[in-house]
Structure formats: structure tokens, C-alpha cells
Length: 628
Image 1 (spheres, rainbow, N blue to C red):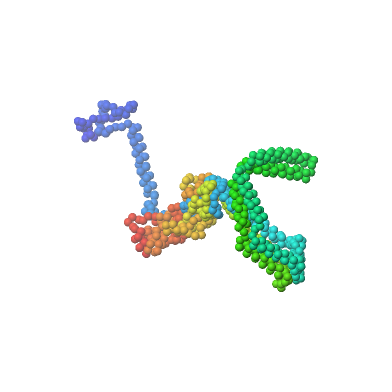
Image 2 (cartoon, rainbow, N blue to C red; image 1 turned 90 degrees about the vertical axis):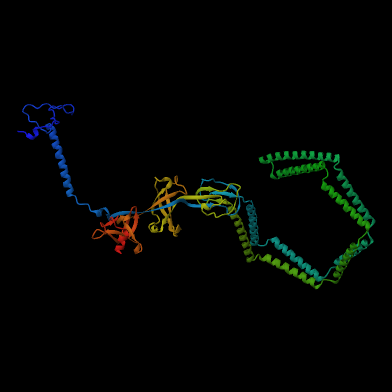
């Protein structure tokens, strides 16, 4: 094939290259060799056939890939820009959950204090102890209460004895005594009516004569023998005083020692005799009466020994100061009596004796004149009184007296019960089973009554201990969610100290009254905790999740899709595409918020799309104003 003349001419720098027909070990080019004779030179590089086949295959694969991509792209629908800004309203089954924060607290906690102020005698618990209901926590000092208890018991016994006496009626001897008093009063009346007897008149005359004689003696002064008697009494008193001042004589001391030794021997003999007789009595050899006589002898011997020892001790000690003073007083008294006799009768003694004479004279005149009317009336009154007393005893006690005695018994028993209650109050007991969480006092401390039912946080140093029972979570739930929480509702609890562990619980109580914190209305919800007694502690913070009922077929949209129209009084709604796919406000009724989604009660249908973002260049305020 003829070559192209234009290509046969080469420039001076051109060289002819070709690949060797052999396949070298390396891919390096080999130096060109001269072409065989008759070969036409060409400016195009010549490649081996295998390389040409590979390049052709690669070209075909690339063309096929490009062609397939173009076919697939032509078959895909065009992306709608509205799909990137909207989501469909979905129909889902929802489980309502309400979250809140709370604090772990005891189910019941009280500060225990005594009902009356006093000092702690015994404190029987320590912090951390587990106690049962009614267990003694502390005992207060109660000596004064026990004393008043004894008095109250005595008062009850006295009132009861009085009641039994009235119920039993009068004893026969009491009736006999009343009869005797009546007879005596009647005899007195008869005597008064009959007038004085001759012997009574004679007695009156004798008393009058005696008074006159005494008056004459006083006027005449003391007789010599009376002065001698006074002098003798003075000398005797002086001698006794001298003896006391001189002390005990040696012979008196020796005599007292001998008496002690004799008494000791007699006491030892009596004790030995008693021991033998007690052995015989135990064997039944002697009677009880004989043993009692021996015991009496033993007591008498020991008493004699004590008396002898005391007398010896007094003699050894000498006269006591008070004995000497008493002897000195007796001497002074004797001296004064002697001085009075030697001085003669005083005027006042004469006057007193004259008065006695007049009194005796009047009594004699009354006897001689006979009984007066008023004496007879007085004697008759005494007879009537004795008769009434006898009648009352014979008839027995009246019903009202017995009723009054029964009332007195009841009153005494009430006083006794009051003191018993005071004694019971001196013992501080646990009102319920639980754990001692705080201890404020020790034995010997003085404590006063405080609000024993107050919370632990209000305890004072006058409290004895704080007692707590069980654990619960007190959660604070906003007003908007409180209608969804009911008693017995299940709860999940996560304590801050155990974030990886979920404790179960159940709603026990929803507070009937709200509280306000930072102008937010909240309700306290108390949740019982099941388990966790070893981990959870009072005062821990916890997050709680209230598990509500499941709602099937609920319409939900993302929470970000909800907008609020301020101009329409806070009306809530969503933005839906209009005919031109532009956002349009539509009012809806919203329900619960569950996670990042919110339930729609009405206003949209399943499958409708709502905006979660605004098209570029548009503002929410403009859209809301346009719809209004």
C-alpha cells in the first residue's frame, strides 16, 4: 500500500520507534532497529496486538457505564424541593411518658421526745439501729412520779376500804357502843331531872373547904418543912451535877464490863440453843411453839447484850455535854423554887387561890339549888342525838352515802391512772418500726417536750432521736401534666447516684393541693419504691418517668412543626402546603409531647404534609399575617 508522500519526509529531530516483538522482563523501551527493506516508514507508533485489544475492551466498558448511568438518570423522578421542607403526618401507637424530678425521702419520719421535761436515765439505741413498733428508745428519770404513784395507790386503797365499810354496814360492837352511849345519856338526863344527890353536895362542900384551906395556907406563907424539902431537892441536884462533871468512877466501868461479859455469854448460849432447836424443829422433834420460845429467849439475850454494851460505851465516853447542861438546869430550877419559898407567896398566887375558892363556892351553890332548865334541855338533846346515832347504825348506810363512796373510789382510781400515765410517758417508745437515722441526746442529757411528730429537718437539740420508715420519691409535676397521673400508676426511677440502674415504683398519692415555686404551679406526687433498699438513701435526687396508657392510632408530627399564632391569642397550628406549595397556617389541637414528637388531636389527616422548615426568603411572621 503506497505511503503518503507527505509523511515520508521526517524532520531532522524525528526518530522512528516501535515495540519489540519479544516481551522483555521489564517494560522499558528497546532501541529501534532499522526497518527491513521494502518497509514504508510511518510517523505513528505501532503497538503490539495484545495491548490494542486491552485498550479496546476498556473503552467499551467505559462507554457502557456512561450509557447505563444516563439511562438510570432518565428513569428517576425529579426531586421535589417541597419534600426537603415537609414531613407527612404519621399514624403511630404511642405510650405516654411524663418526666419529672424529685427527691428520695422517708415514707414516715418523726423526732422522738418525752412528753414531760426531764433527764435521760437510759438511752437504748444508737444511730442506724433497726427498731420495732413499741420498742423502748429511752427511759427518763421518774423518782418523783413513782412517789406520787405510791400515794395514789394508798388513796385508792383508802377509798375502797371506806366503800366496803359502808357496803358492809355497822358491826355489832358499833351498835353496842351506840346503845351504851344512849343509855349513858338517858342516865344523865334522869340524874339532871332528879337533882343532885346528897353525896354530890357533900363532895361540893369538901372541895369548897379544901379551896379555903389552900387559900389560908397561901396567905400564911410556906411552912418550914416545905423550905427544907426545897433545900433537899437543891442539894440533890447539885450532887448529881457534880457527879456528871467528875465523870464515871473506875468501879462503875469495871462493873459495866462485867455485865457486858455476862450478857455476851448469855447471848452465845441462847444462840447455840436456838441453833440446836431449829435442827430439832426441822426434824419434827419439837413443836413450833417451843421453837418460838427459844427464839424469844435469843432475842432477849441479844437485847440485853446491846444494852450492856451501850451502858459501857456511855461510861467510857463520860458524861455528855447535854447531860451536864440538863443537870445545871435542874440546879437552877431547884434554886428558883427555894428562893420562891423563902420569899413567901406572891400576890398573884393568892389571887389565883381566891379564884379557886370562889369557883368551888359557886359549884356548891349550884348543887344545893338543883338542876336548871337549860341543863335538863341539854341532857335531853344528848339523849336524842344518841338515839338517832343508834337508829342510823341499826338501819344501815343510805344509798346516797354508798354512791358518794363509790364516786370517791372512782376519783382515786382516776388520779392513780393519771400518775400511771405519767410513769408510762417517762418511757419513750418507737411509734412505728423503722431505723434510727439521727441521735441528738445522750444519757444524762436534759430534754424537753418538742413537736415529736415533726419532720427530721426541724429537729432540735432537745429531741432524743429521729426515727424513719421506708423510702419514697417525692416528685414535683407541673400543673399541665398532673391530670395524666393517677394512683397505682407505674413509674421508672433513676437516681443521680445510679444513672445506669432503673428502679421500679408506683404512684401512691397525688397531692390534693398545689405548691408554687418561682411562680410555677406544681403538684407533689409520692411514689413508692420497689427494691433498692441497699443502694438508695434519703436525700438523693432522682428523675422519675410516669408510664401512662398506650394510645393506638395517634396522629403525630415533629414538635418543631408546631407554631403559635400570637395574633390569634396563642393559637397553635402547623404550616401545610397550599395549592402553590406555599406554607399556609392551619389551627390544630395538640396533645401530649412524647420525645421529639407531639400528638395532634384534630386539624390534620394522616398523610398530609407539614412544614418543618421555611422556604428560602420567607418569614413566619409574614406567613401568619397573610393567613390572618
